[in-house]
Amino acid sequence: MSRTSILIGCVGMAMTVVAVLVAGGAAISRLADPAPRAEAAINHAMMDHAAQPPAIKPVAAHASEVVIDNFSFGPGTMTVAVGTKVVWINDDADPHTVTSETDPKLLRSPPLDTGDSFAFTFDKPGTYRYFCSLHPHMQGVIVVQ
Ligand SMILES: [Cu+2]
Image (cartoon, rainbow, N blue to C red; front, side):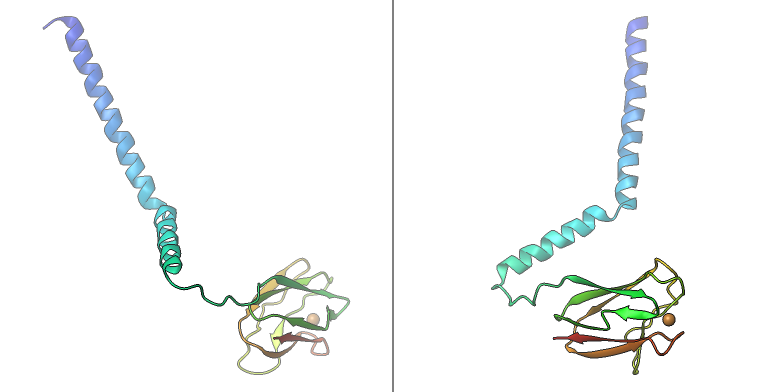
């Protein structure tokens, strides 16, 4: 065996080792990253959906904001469509909460410091009264239609 062929043999083996390492690394990263599988599930769900007759879609849900400032909720009363995500944002200097008036308390935010926000998606029609548990005179209403 010539020196050259030994050299080529060594290089070949080294490349095989590298290839195995790369493949192993790819497999590990695939295991660690659930995204491809989730994506496949979504695609599958979409395909299932496409196979069925089109369902009646609810009213498009948009995010609506209630701004907390000067110890009040603004707007105090807000009417939204079913499926709307309402976001409360505390622009006040004091902490406030968004808390349902009645049980079961659908709305039960932690104290929101300045700049904090709290979100809730209303899936059922109704009148949802809430207040700030730290300053009970602060009250608001979300009407879901
Ligand atoms: Cu408050």
